[in-house]
Image 1 (cartoon, rainbow, N blue to C red):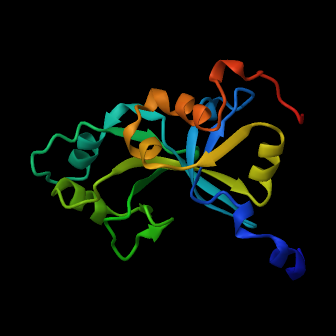
Image 2 (tube, rainbow, N blue to C red; image 1 turned 90 degrees about the vertical axis):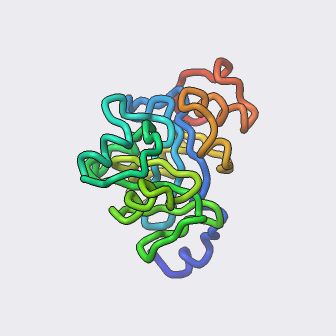
Length: 195
């Protein structure tokens, strides 16, 4: 790819820091009704964390127990999420930017990503970020792949907001994301292909 093309592509054409919404025409069952926070989207590809698919078999207090992390006794019966089908044994903490350690990646002014034991220890001590959740795995796309999937009507997208990330119930997030872009979930036609 020429440098001239790279210069012409503006950052605004990328979805970093936005929400990706699976359309009803999504064929991959792993992403059915998924809402994904896009951590990175560039000419090299894209990476995001699914924010509405809790893993039914495990909660955060069990992660602490398995890792021998002592908590302050606060109730950590919180969901742990399926973040996506790539590197499913690797844990990620998507969190508010009020907490930072050297390994933290700033995604925007309000959201950061960390992937270390240190943040879990801070959370267990009550010294972690105000808002957070843990996910195993992530969603990844090679160069141009996400753009093609959007053209094929597999995905919709919108701006991220704090309610979507931290406050809505998991089962509400997909519907709320669609309403945010002016779509009633029942009104979408379950067909793929370009309009």
